[in-house]
Image (tube, rainbow, N blue to C red):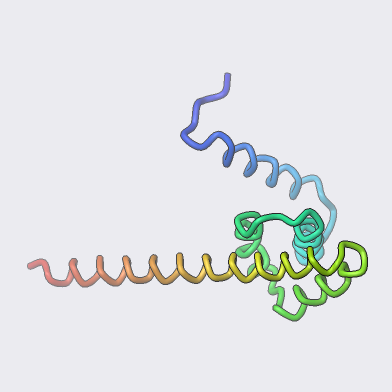
Length: 118
């Protein structure tokens, strides 16, 4: 019997992603680029791209490579979807940066507090 979780939807999506990665024979870079193209094709929201920022960085993908994917799929999915994808990717990167800055700030505050204690 499955255990209950506070985040069953996110847990399910994470499990599906892990299963997809394990069953796929594509290299890491091609896998992420393919997923990003699929997200663009279906006009996915920024939160969907957010889950791919870390893996894209880990795969050493560049902004130019992401742009190349959008250029490659533009004739198939259309300009509106490509522009929407570009906006959502930018939003996801902004969220990632904001989260990293907040985490760094919290760590700095915790360190400052631990230094001030005798």
